[in-house]
Image (tube, rainbow over all chains, first blue to last red; front, side, top):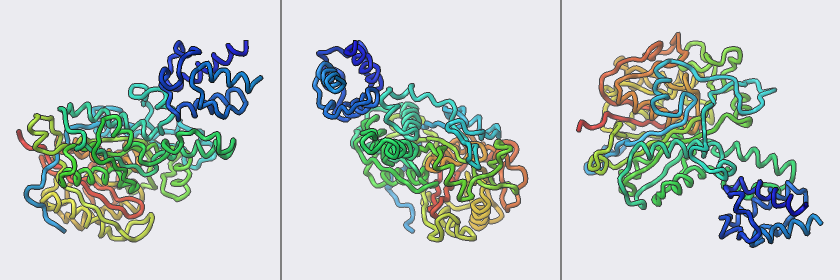
Amino acid sequence: MLEDKIYETLRDALLEFDVDPASVVPAANLEDDLGLDSLDRLSAMIVLEDRFGVSLSGLDKAGTVGDAVEMVLSRLG
Amino acid sequence: MPLRQENVPRVMVTGLGLRTPAGSTVNAFWEGLLSGHSFAAPIRGFDTTGFPVNFACEIRDFEPRDYLRQRELTNLDRSSQLGIAAAADAIEDAALAPIDSTRCAVVAGCAMGGLGSLHKQVAVVMSSGPQRINPLAATIFMPNATASLLSMRFGFEGPSLCIATACAAGADAIGEALGLVRSGVADLVVAGGAEAAVIPATMAAFSRLGALSQRVDDPATASRPYDRDRDGFVLGEAAAFLVLERSDLALTRKARIYAELAGYGRNCDAYHLTRPVPGGIRAKQCMGLALTDAGLAPGDVMHVNGHGTSTLLNDETEAQAICALFGIDRPPVTSIKGAVGHSIGAAGALEAVATILSVRNGLVPPTANCRHVDLNLDVVIDRPRRIRKGPGISNSFAFGGHNASLVFTPAPAS
């Protein structure tokens, strides 16, 4: 399923930021729970743009993992 | 030139840390130097197809994961990674007591800094456009990155400086640190240099300039400082840091003292971007300044750790300077660049470590690959040479005419 694929890609990409894959759940707040500051989220956005081949501008403003996945789904759909 | 003043704090070396082509520990490095072995080999770090010079002294055994998390591996230039590992080892080696962090400083030397990372980010911009650049790119290639990272890692809130005087940067960083303690600004300084110079841009540039040895058929014998058949230097990577402490504080906490950092001299040839001023007059004066600063005379020096790059010009000019300063009672000279190559911004710091070890152990390592000396110098060759306990002087005479000399003397008898 596309959503699963997005989660999988997100978990893999966030390994580069020392994020434990098990903590990448919909309710997790990117900053407070996963420890990603604004620059980390910007870097993560660029990594995901490369992985999915679409522009994801604004993704770095997403609050939770769930919000981010929603944004990717809407850009891909 | 002001003479040594009373009531100026003295400065002791209480910690050492390094990463070198000869090894990642002080013991391995020292053993490597004593062996007379050269650590030059064909480059593995990048594809050297088309490069006229394809060999260098690389660090083969660096394991950054021992010190850094994944995101730091992605977002730190190799030079910063080497610097962090070396400085962290030095701090651990010093086994510090709690200290006022606002009086702790960092001075890091480099010549090119994050040039390797800059190269990669420029490639991304050129191929994929400016928006694909790593958002942290500026923090990765800025030359001050290493100094900043060290201050953060150790929580040092005093001065944090980056010195970029090419091949003298590592020595100048240590010299500036001496000044910070003497002037009362800092009680403790982590000072040294880090450079990851074995990258395409640097290899191409120095090769095209004609500065590198072309001995591609026998890289292991290419770097031969002071030798009659020398033909240029061999690039190397390295990082080396000292922990420098105000003497009374080091003695009070019964720190293990390697040596005293007794003097620092620096001047400029003001002559040419790459060639030294003929006769080495300014280099001679630089050594003189360092000795005066240490309250010593040329006759007190037991050995010289030379700049000795293995280029025709530097080695000849340095020999003239040494002869002019020391006369017939000249001390033995060695250059570690025969073993570990020229690590540019780190060289002065790595050579400071070698000088400290020579002063401490009463032993001067041989200059690797040096067989026939056609200069008026007493070069230590073939095997290590025993010396009497006493001061050692370490020279760095850089591109751009930046000269720096450091004087180390034996630790005070307890």
